[in-house]
Length: 94
Image (cartoon, rainbow, N blue to C red; front, side, top):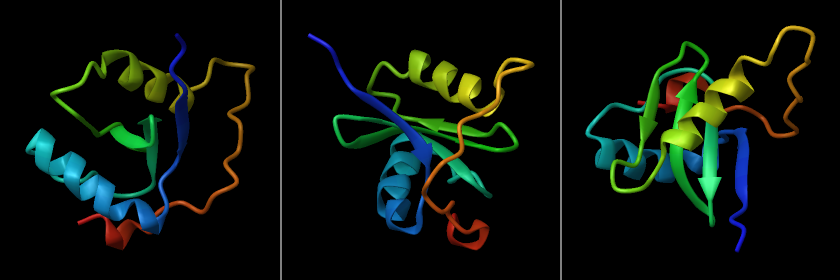
């Protein structure tokens, strides 16, 4: 059985899911543009451009966080794939 993981930039409509995730992680939502790891439609981890991470402590998220790190910092010579969604505005993630 394979599980689909979606990695994408956060958009304004992700704010309720980010609030739930931050509450579960007992941490604030990172500020700035966020990259999300989504499994089965649920946001399980988020990473800011500065490297701040929130993740669901009740789900196995270590691999998702590592995937977010790799997506945010592609290997030299490898270009990051641009997102087709607009990033969340920095002022909303509070």
